[in-house]
Image: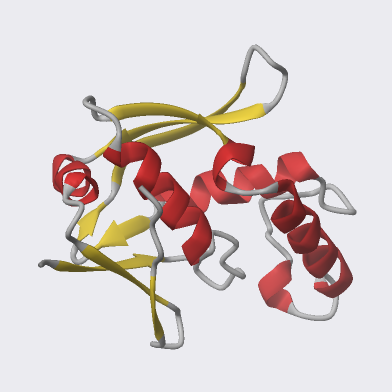
Length: 151
């Protein structure tokens, strides 16, 4: 059984892509044959988590610099702004010493909801397809948490 360490470089910003979101994304990639995947953001991040994150970010935005997200000018931060942060943080997601995605792009789906178009790197794709693999999320403070994946 192989173990993989996943990390996200959020810079000085609060990382909003939680291990549960990564686990949902890995499960979706596991079922794919191609490197490309199109997924609705709400399929991997439940609306309750989105609402919680928006409350936390907007409450702390002007009291803690980690919640400022300089790329988002709107006040308060909206769901679309949060999704932009998710897109950028997924682009910086790495597994061991490699990038997970060659490309991550947010777009509006036919249903009107937000979606992500991702292109996995080959090493990440193969790791996701290995049902016996274990994934661990490494937080910025060095703590590690096992990612639960429901295939």
